[in-house]
Image 1: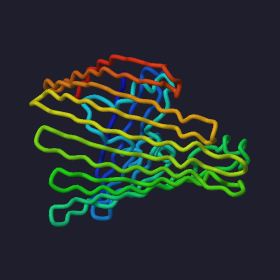
Image 2 (image 1 turned 120 degrees about the vertical axis):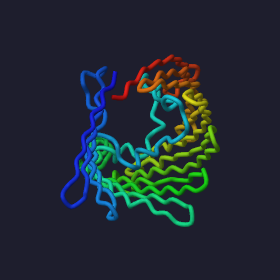
Image 3 (image 1 turned 90 degrees about the vertical axis):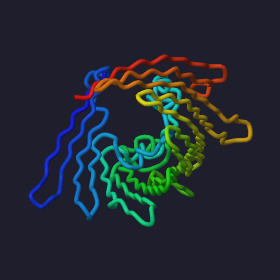
Image 4 (image 1 turned 45 degrees about the horizontal axis):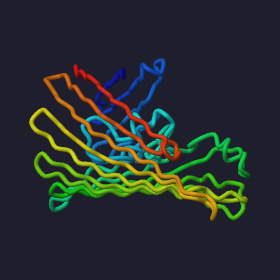
Length: 287
């Protein structure tokens, strides 16, 4: 069970402050998300991401679904993480988001996220780098008009410190979604150009996602697939491809929403023939 807490207030100058916290009770009251947002009107928005919640991490998977991402439950068995975009700069970071721009029916949103320490870099130190903090920066852009939304972003990590002939990790993503009445469809790709240097060649990762959802009054049905390939780094190695798919439904009755998902993963953790299935049911109440 998850618990969500929100609070907000308005300052004398018209700015507003919002606090949000999500608690996962299945993980011994572990905080899974927490942010403080300062809305500055025409000056834009600043958001402090104490635990997850950055704008970049918010577009890691934007496919239409009734309940959750295809990989959300299957990922519990360490199947891998196709939602890597924005995750490195999602905690202990700060966002600046421009005010929403409107021009000739087109809506434009953009953001920049800076994280002065995206991890204590223990792995970087053991692979020839310096035991130091690793900063990261992410940029996003989203444009929508007449039901079509196109967006993407780039995330750059300075995790090549102290390595010769090095290049830091660079994550990119791009997507397109279209909504027409009750129908929504989407397609998205993401790519991780892993860090290289000092005899270490990182294994790059490529992700492809698509989804479709249909809403009939209070009922939403969806189907989506995700494929992730961790590329080989030598002539003798073989790339590892994992696949996820999920059929979902959600029904709302006033303040209560009942949702369910049938999720399946194949080649889990890059192991050929390792499959995983899970049925999820959730009941949410809004007060």
